[in-house]
Amino acid sequence: MGCPDWPTCFGQVIPPTSVDQLPENYKEVYSEYRHQKNVKFARYLEFLNLNDAAQQLLNDPSVREEADFNVAKTWVEYVNRLIGVVIGLFIIALAWRSFQFRKNKPRLFFISALTLITVIIQGWFGSIVVSSNLTTWTITIHMFLALVIVAMLIYLLQISSTETSENRIIQGSQPLKWLLIACVILLLMQTFLGTEVRSAIDRIANTVIPRNRWIEGIGSSFLIHRSFSWLVLGSHVILFYLLRKSTQNKALPLALIILILGAILTGTGMAYFGIPAFLQPLHLVIATLTFGLQLYVYFSLNTGGKLMFNKTA
Image (cartoon, rainbow, N blue to C red; front, side, top):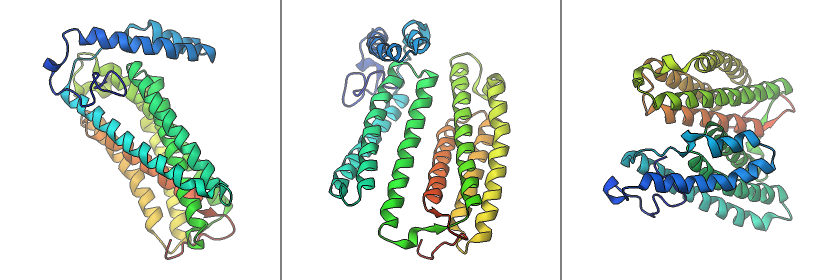
């Protein structure tokens, strides 16, 4: 909530660096601005028969509560938006470049166009995350939309590679394929559980409880998330073993298990060291990289025989 409006930040293209640059009643102004946006969005929710979500946006007083100006949070959010703009421009270029393949390689064009549409939706929904004052379900949807974009880009990378070089194909077995699918599903489930932990942290952060005691106040959602990590680790250890046993190239399975261990270690660090702020985004980035690598291996998998990586893969 460093920038309570969207796409500008406190009505400015370049955000303020001091609260003195804002009007005295900025909280009331932007609270009302966000409320009017929520009124419009609530109509869509009601049309989809999501009446409870609509009523939460309209009637929950915490949704309209405006945060104090914080220059660090404002500029973090501003940089986040700048990166989003750069990504959007690259996706536009990708869709434009793929247009020439619409007849002879329609998958490239279709997935590229679909990625562009998803990025536009993601940008718009980012404004809803802001207007809803970081309501939990909006954050979850926003995050999983990002993972969908990652999935489509990884798929585009794979099909554009295999259509120009057979060296990109990985030979593997059906059991390996299904184990990989199970690992992807488990990671997504763990990610969803992580969003529940994050929402609990957000609630505690608004209380007087000191940061080093936040874990104690999270409750069952943290315990479930922590316990589920053992299942994620166990499945990936088996996957790592099978990949290492079946291939001469050790890079991909090694990278996958390192990322899984990295996600677990950063999660452990948050649990035992009072949730350091820098570990929260690092934990999420590692999980996203793991998801992307899983999909890269899956989309490259040809289940016609033993798993063999070409030296140039």
